[in-house]
Image (cartoon, rainbow, N blue to C red; front, top):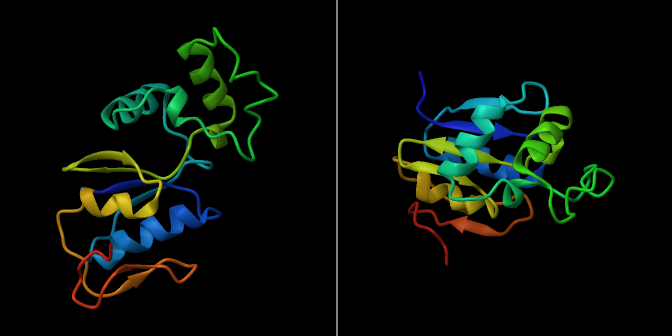
Length: 141
């Protein structure tokens, strides 16, 4: 059983890059395609809290019903946000990664490097060609 979980959307480049960096460390994570298998309300709350975010900070606006649902309005409660995520999982930003070292919303994708117990096993570049890790497995700054 793996100790790394990624809440993943395969249609998202950031999510794909994050998953690839986890695998570049020799780790096969538990992959939860959260649009098909959404986390429960409690899981969402726990994940967001563990990442040090507010629920509002974990919401995705682009390409979602965020505006139509009025989620940016003053006075929207956490319960209302959770109801919206439950009905429209696309509202939960991605990718969230949970490891023994912590939980984070990995935007940008290289944030995942701080959560992995294993080093990168070689060079890694994002899908757009941006180098992230050099041939020695060290982070490119």
